[in-house]
Image (tube, rainbow, N blue to C red; front, side, top):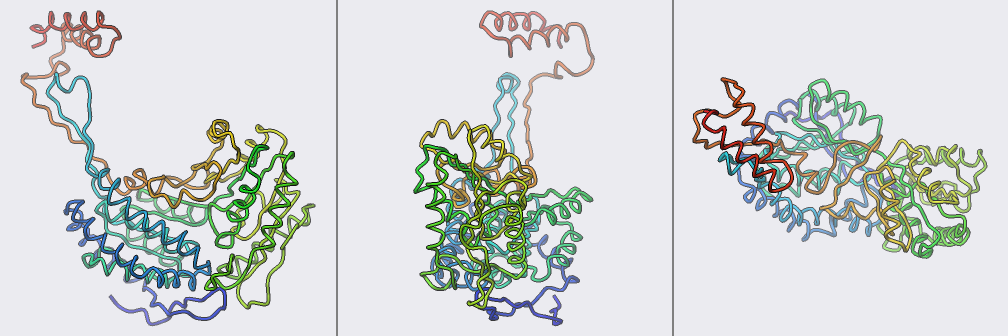
Length: 520
């Protein structure tokens, strides 16, 4: 592979704007060869048993556990989130995914035996096997640069695939650290390869190389572009896109807990989370009490460098992110919203910092309630009835996650079924991404397909049915030549197999036996 010496990618600390590291970019002309190497490595890897693949992968877990502090620090320096968030929201989900692939994942890939009432009679055996698709192209974002690609890579590799990863160029240092972790796993050469550089340039080159599966996490516009490219050659694609996630507070909710969760859910990772609390709907009977607590807790947040253990919220990733937040706040102000706290950029720290901001009197004419902000804002709107709250929650182009807050779990579950979204959490928010067995993904413009869970694992496989027939007959009833006797015999078989009641079934069996000689 030729080195691209034209430029290096700089990892910039968004808290200080200092350069953390320089990473070699990938030349687009190298990508066809990279995919060819991956295909060669995959053929041998896919032929291994699931147990042998798992034994190889689990060495990475031990390496991560031994180097947790280093990886948390790299994530914080590269992305800006606090060290605690790097630990809880980045490293923990990866460790849980290692646990998942060793238990649920390994069992799921064993295949499944199928049952049918005709099987024992006709001496048929049928089952499904799950084969690797080949080479998976994974395009991952900067907001969770470790957890998102790592959990996807582990699923793809366990299923027997090779992986070509394209991390965001904004967090190339974390991408490089992922490569180092898998080198410690001693994967076969070429099985996991990392493309570093511009997404627009390398993304197109990756699609030109025709991966056997594409998994993209990122914005809706880019997801639509990739889906159009994938359609050209029918490449299967999983898209985990944006969110505008509603947070519904009912009158009987634990207001202290709900307020604390809303503040955390809105401002974790400076709001740069697809499942952030981006819309709060609170019942008007408890609205003022809830708002008072939210404003109080928001004002108490300590903004600063994520390396400091006392920091509650770090910087945004770039100037572009701050510009969009400023646009949404200005639009809300112009349309009558009240900024209860925050609403301005922080200039004293030198990095990309913005105040955690609570927006009151929000409504659906405002950009902060309709477009994904992906920043530290918490817009709040009141409602008077459950039907209204559900209608407001569903009034969005997005459908990733939602949360319902009430002490009545049965009522909450009924409400959850009415919300058009991929995940609903009752009396918590965001947490299910940390549970590897829970499927992750959305509806509407939040994407298609799922990651995590057995369902996400099987998206990296091709399902093949294998059926064996050990018939003692010279030919089957539905084969040529056709006859009236065969017609009658087949009808009798329907009764024997499918009608309700023993007398009906017995009649079918007798009719079938009566016609048996005529069926030959």
